[in-house]
Length: 419
Image (tube, rainbow, N blue to C red):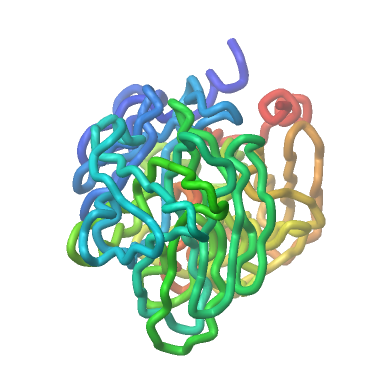
């Protein structure tokens, strides 16, 4: 019997129903997680296609490797609320999209969602050719993305005409050619059937004005591309977006994808006191050193009480932050370097009210037995949710979550976290 077989709770994303993510352990259903999301959201399914999941249906997302192939095991995709400000995100023949030295022919290829609704963009050969739309932007950070498939071109561009920003993508060599002005953090991701999702961050200083944002052909020789699924996203309340999120389809108005939540509160099989060990495997999607609006991989909490919790959160590329609270907040910074999209295995054992040990990828990164005491007063498990006085709305996905009502040995911590 392996260490994981002895867990009091084991959640591996595989089985789900509306409002529910099923856990392997315990077998009586006490470890199943309640799932909520008002409205739909998209995922990458096992075949590699983008699929829409309905109201309160969990998204088991199959990440793609560098060659666009779906992974064998799914992650439970948990994201904060986001809004796509582009209209008619899949129909560039619509009048909301303006054309400059470009022709759009509708429904010419199989799109990343498996339907025949990708449009053909053809440059007229006389200059840089674009489709663009006017979007009302504030002083904030936005992420812009589109799915593109090369036919006979090479460089494809994202352009912020109003605020002078450009990102150029080499679809032949799968690389970023350049970024400038308001554009940064460009990214190119391969999808099945030679599709790519290209993206960049826009830092807007408009303070509330219309900006023309577009996509197009950089060269002057009549290049052609298939395009589909345009998105410019903010955090759904007019504020900054901190990372690129999953695709949000729109038609004649902007669309908001609401926040995902997965929780077990109260968890009847949870320990009644220290010690306890949590193990999480998952993908780092963002950092937020602002403190309140950051991402915790998993948490122990008190049912219906937002200010009692045990959390480990991703604070920055070089730091983690351990947070514990039942009456007063206690914070400890931990030096540890990560990168966005890293998949990490993290185990944290709360040995006592003053002693915490953390292992990441087989290495002990924190061991302190003289912390300020936090007495036990917890009964719930949260996945990818950070609390600070209330649910902050930030989320992070999970590949696995295990809980033991005991302190694992150091050898066991190494075993479960070694990549």
